[in-house]
Image (cartoon, rainbow, N blue to C red; front, top):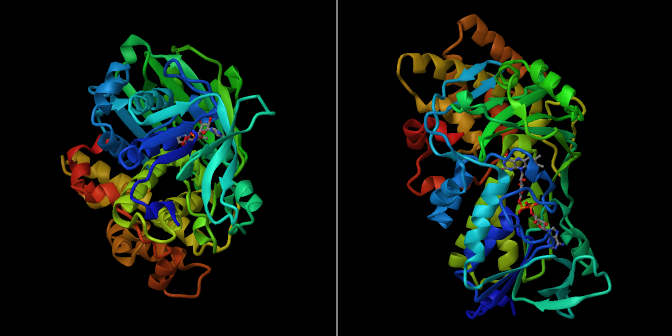
Length: 512
Ligand SMILES: Cc1cc2nc3c(=O)[nH]c(=O)nc-3n(C[C@H](O)[C@H](O)[C@H](O)COP(=O)(O)OP(=O)(O)OC[C@H]3O[C@@H](n4cnc5c(N)ncnc54)[C@H](O)[C@@H]3O)c2cc1C
């Protein structure tokens, strides 16, 4: 029997207490009697990066959809991060540059903070839930299954470093949120399951991050983003973000195996070489608090568990353990949050149906598929980056040109409208797509193309249309239609009284 056919669901075992694991515990604590999280790291004693999450020293930005989910799950979240010293954006500026100009964002609202502080705030709330227990310094080493291997019934764990030990933990549901190092593929193979083909992008991502003390006279600078843009030769981007403790976290990022320097001098030179020198100017007299620290991510990976013909009852996978993206687009934590919401919805609507866990994995694809597609299309701009997967992507060159047009016209229009004190939400569509509020199909279509083209001369319009069609033998409408897969986009949180366009008009800058 599928455990979810039973109404008295009892214990859930969650592997890993990163963002995905903690949010999952919060949601399931309402549905199950006991939640047990197994975490290989030691219990954090303060908001700080952790060994088990090596990327946690690096700059993490929550795109608004993810932050909205966290605020729904933890109504005191804003107070919590404020008390922990998150940087208050009021009166501080947010600047976002791309090769076509700057976005007119002005002052911000809300808070910025480090990944360590975010996770700490969530952890304190989850640890306080009466039916949640986190067992630190233990790792999950294997899944436990019924003799016929159709159902996962727990896991074997051991205290960290004690290889001779093997402790049995039974559970009605096991959820793997162990991040990029997930061992689910091996565990499934060991249980005799045939895996579906994974999808990869050989992104070759490099980050280098250094912290600086914010000089008192520059406390009005909260966030500066210089987007890389490989198609126009700008292979490196940079971000400065104010976090807690009077600190700016500053990173250089790149892809396509173009790794940013990790020595102090090279880092400063890298900042000065960006196509906009603003970061070097802001930081020229700032006191460094750390040495630059590097991070490399050779590939991005999407497991296609939803395509497997057989999937064991009692097992789910969430967060980076299911799919991890190019971090430059800041989508990972938000996708984890959306997946957790999807799980909560499925538990409310479909708990007890046959193949429930496989159904949940399929539903999660509604959000994963457009995000993965979008970041893959962008990554393919970098020299040497390739996509390896069951389905080849269509119209990549056309899409690069199309998205360049979107970015250029949107940037220009938002600026000229801002000068007149006006705002037209359609020019935010490109950004709302990147922030997972709307489907790529809402941006890539003949109607939107016509809207962008009304801002160029007739001669330029003809040239753009000819350029978009170049190398293809079909009409543009068909090309655009075929280039974007038919996503079943899950608007989730945006649909619940948070119309992204209204939200955008009201608080433009908080969308960053
Ligand atoms: C350089 C970089 C920058 C990023 N920037 C952003 C950003 O700006 N915005 C954004 O949204 N995302 C960003 N991301 C992505 C983000 O870090 C991930 O999407 C997010 O951390 C995923 O959370 P998770 O809980 O799935 O995995 P993780 O955070 O990796 O957590 C996994 C947990 O599982 C534990 N664990 C692993 N194996 C075991 C085991 N066998 N037994 C017990 N415990 C185990 C680990 O110790 C860890 O605590 C970035 C990623 C990188 C690499």
